[in-house]
Length: 120
Length: 120
DNA sequence: TTACATACTTAAGAATCTTATGTATATTTA
DNA sequence: TAAATATACATAAGATTCTTAAGTATGTAA
Image 1 (cartoon, rainbow over the protein chains, first blue to last red):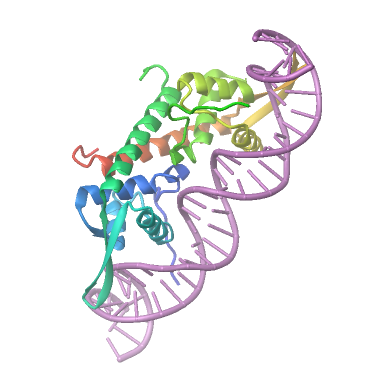
Image 2: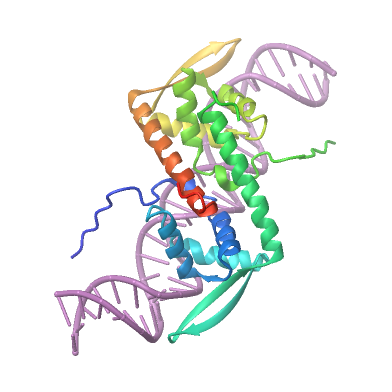
């Protein structure tokens, strides 16, 4: 019998809703090809364990991005296990750019609401 | 027959998902009592029309915050129309503080992912 | 008098996530 | 060596949070 203690955070926040696609496109543009599990570990590392991407969100997202033409996939056997390496397409890079612009807009708007003193 | 042209933005982004509660609590703490319609106009003004809070999202959210004890409500007739003024409670202020902390964490984490050069 | 603005409500459906379950192999630990 | 954990992917069921849409009602401007 195991009891897990959640000391802090662990993406309890619903603010991450809608940001996964942006994160995936940006990571894949930054790091070249990556596979799903690798992405979860990279995000955990970058956020010091604060943001944990669940498989139930990750894999359907990757499939959708691929179906949209934003990613290509290539299966590869490593250590007798299958990895699916994803790579961003030119279309995906365009999408990434517009997603990042949306993120900037979102941040600016939140600042305007939360911190109206500094009129961004 | 009318055709509406959406020139730019209008919160097409799914990034706002999950941020409404934070926005409501912050605005009500900042401006004292406000009513629903007033909130939509205030947000539109602060974001220069970029973020439009829909009634279908706003009113259920206000009801939920009230049911949670974060807001109190008082109906008032003005110009022969009903307005429901909402006010933040001490509990609501606590919730606001923790929501803003979550927002800060979210922003920091997004920076770590999007802009890993600057290790925040 | 028709449209638009103000003001609130709520149901149906969509999008995006969590939880849970399943499959399979490799490695570490008790 | 058996059990637990880590690696690696998939997907269905349910939850949350939103959009769309329809409804009610009054006031004002075109």
